[in-house]
Image 1 (cartoon, rainbow, N blue to C red):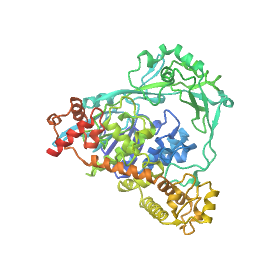
Image 2: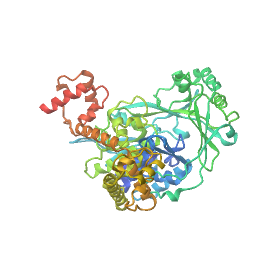
Image 3: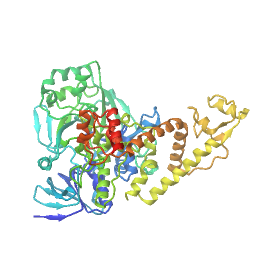
Length: 630
């Protein structure tokens, strides 16, 4: 029997597993990443894209911390767009269509070329835990073929493979996404170790033969020119290339008729599906049932790559039987003669029940066992990758005896994501949205590197050169913003005429350039003639990034200051630590529900306690009094 000693074992090589494994290996840990199939490394079993509203923020933050997803999509995208440009900078989000095969190939290559990292195609069927004087801790993992890998840390990133089954109407197959093998043995071992699991489900739409679609009836959607990269390390000029088109179309009243007539054959409505699905990414059956007043729904036709004719039918995931699917899809405008290459299906899988994780993504009851991605109850490639990186960073810090890296809600969307997964019960797969971030004006995608690069540098995943670039740009931004507040222009004829030509009102007294920039029609760029002493900024991306930050920092200064004041109040509650040995039954005045929830989640701070569902502001006040008294 094989018995090998390693430092870190990563279970699963999806988007979470890849980031976790790379973070561990790059920090010097001998790491093995286990996958049921090497063909599933960084697989995109659902939509062929990276980013989107709020998800683009996650990818940018991931990149700032030293992750890989942004670099890989920059190299393998076939279309790129900046979403929400008509709105404020807080909600601008990058989204890129990926060549799915190329993305997988590129990420796998990076894993294969990484020192200290080894890929092993094997199903992990069990974990081994040992009792120590400090409590239970992970000892290693065992594969189905009998090999044992002793290790200091384990990261579970099983995605949707754990005890998975796919459903298309009455046809049920016990398999992972895309027909790949499911992981059928690990769940029992986790339960034996005292880990509570639950059942979630998600789904994916059909893929169509491109030749069978009438694109003349649809609305083309073109990529942006020039392309803005995801990674702060990517030279924008190096990725300008021809882009593929996507297309927008719509369902019809006939679509809804077909679905309603066959709901009894849907596993979702026939009670066959046990798991809970994602509220914010519903199946087409759900849309028709829950929004009966809508006459049509948007459908996005997205190419899966440059070397395939498969088209992803976005917005129409389904678990209806194959014959119903074909009838339904052919009611969509432009799909009247479509041919299905791959059927739509729903997939059920085991994942972690809430209340068992620390903010470091380590299990509370088993030291050295970390969890990431859809196993934690989230959905989406970007959410998974972000958790994978943070689990990897904290696994490394655990091995090296360092305090974990915890990003709070005021620092990053990643902080919001993990905080919500740890502190909320999340009855359905969790999806990141801009509305979940209270301080989103501060947590923009454009400043992710300025906010987070130093954490990646401290973790050894960001180079000295990359960190120095951030320091240089921050210094330029700060000095120029300060200067704009100090340079004044008078109310003379020359200034008045200039403002009039830009459609701006006259000034009545001497006014700073910063005050002028607060007007919506004026920008740092177009007021340059009023600023003859302006220092020269660097050429290329550095100069563009600096100018963008100057515009945002000056034009939204009042709003930014207001959010910064809110963050100070937030930080006060976060800094109030709750003793780890607190007996909540001893806290008089707590409501029964609050006592139960606090005992279950064991928050580390007053701020964290206040975000637990079922803990009211009055309960928080009682808790504060108790802690002060003790």
